[in-house]
Length: 504
Image (tube, rainbow, N blue to C red):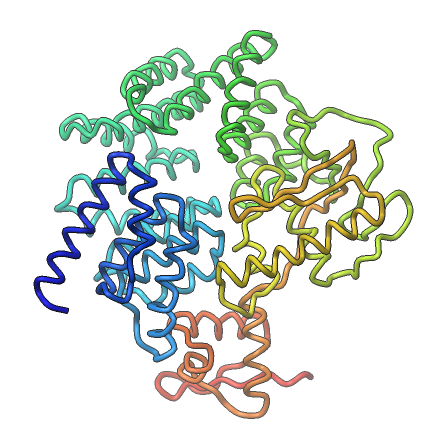
């Protein structure tokens, strides 16, 4: 590319950035769609893809990034880090989290500390705050000369400490507030006050929490930010904790929950239900939160706050679309586990693709299931692609809807924005198990290793070459196979070999 061409294209990128920042979304996307990514350098394509994703058109930019990543990996070469990291963010957006984790193994985190933020983006989606802490600590150390990035790392670290109820939470947030005040980081300051209010709430200092939330509200009111919804949520929670039997407090609380539903802020709805059950001691709602949340760290938090003995049941009756659940009698019941409805079998094969699709739809009561989630649970041996994966999932949706209709089961799967949700067309209860079992990508790949090397030794390099993965991913896969009793190690150091373990 000629120097003048690079300059012109860089100017175009800056112009597009300005348009996005100033809210000219339609015009910016129109220009982005007209571009030919092959005329740009990979790093520039990553920037353009970032703009596209921010505008809500990740489908377009996914097509730009995928060949740049996988063509390099097919050759055993690490892709351009900027491209790979942006591709990881795209995968996380679509819910293909296993693949996103795997691709990050190709990045040198010491050389590209931005990878730590990409990693915690995925971990946060899985509620793995404890696993996020070391990544954020390293990011803060690496970015010590960039005060704003230190603040970004610190506010995420503080969020981890607050969720984990760690003693460091108050000290960390207080230090962050001072940093934001000194550097005039207004939005981050508002977020920090909101975080500190959560510490006060946990300590039972409700008046102090409301004072901090007032400060956060004053700062954030002038910003087009979802952060203000979080402030309103905590204000309503304090009101409910103070007066759990107050009709006024409940009305305000439910209004915030409704606002979150209108904005499709699913995690705020989950949080609202948890605190409702905590404040009012509503056992049914607490069970809905617990059984309707498929994340182990979140379930552990609920157990710690409400008592693990409340959640010893192996099954739960879920009533879709009923916000604050109550005890209802004489509802027809569909069992997801044994595929029965009102005493008769549903003609769907146990453990097969359609059954697993139904289980996946019922996994999270709050957040719609993403296309990427279904990809890595239903097709664990394949890599995610927006177009082909969507086509597969849409076919499954049609098959399941047809099967449900044929059995007069009042349920239908709807899809929107690469997400799927189960809707009830009449009152119905769905019996869901405490735990779900899906095929796992590591299990799938480990079984393929067994098929590839049934009677001969293999090395990390052999696995890396066969599956086109990084050395770290190959090492982790082999270790998984060893722990599961599929492989056994021979030798050590450079002479390390592995072989498939023979059945005894």
